[in-house]
Length: 292
Image 1: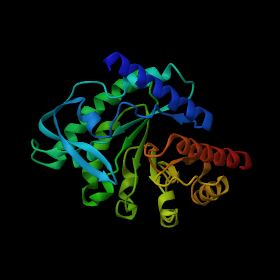
Image 2: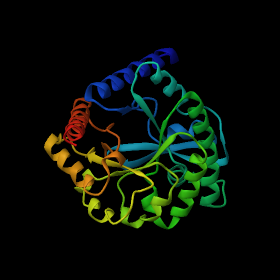
Image 3: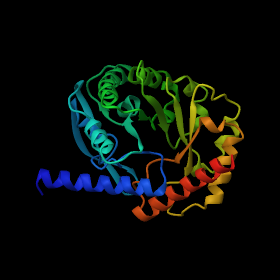
Image 4: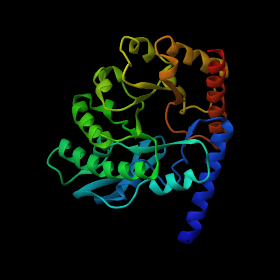
């Protein structure tokens, strides 16, 4: 397959993903990360200072090729600007651009260059900041920083916060930070100090138990992204069950400050199941809007 043929297939896959989201009723979309084999290796390949080693098992039979930082990190090629610009030309929907955060990049790569985790996180954050500035100039209004590694080392939350502050500081975009599958009690209330507009968490996989104790905290400065679809099961939720879950969040969060989303990405599910899960989520949100 030539490079041109590959690019055409990537574009076609992105169009299909966009159309599925539009038909399901999603308000803020992305193109499905069709070029990204995973959330680490792809971005590492866009920066100077990295080499890519062999496969590392993530879970089940899913692997990623683990990068290592062997020289100073420098921004080299755009990460998502081209995808955003293309997407802007094929949909009227709002667009949210996901970028792997600097702390998770540092945690999930080998470090053979920098003397400390903090030093590495700052270097990665400065590179990501350049991409953010390019995205904003291109018109991106929603940017999501994916930081699933933060709960694994809660003692380093200050380092993670410093990295996010470099990425988001002074930008006009609406920023969310997405943290999936961790013990959130270990990072509260510190995570509420992060300079972002939205905190996006997974709830469905843990049967929404975190909503009980999170109600003790004020989300006055952040919106909450409520993960209400479990992406690790092929069972399609019922609209009524999703509505009840969202209703539990509305007991603690103002409706104007609540977004609904899947727990995490849907890429491990068959397309038909992913579509049905999105459709159910959007239908539940629509019915609740009408009722409110």
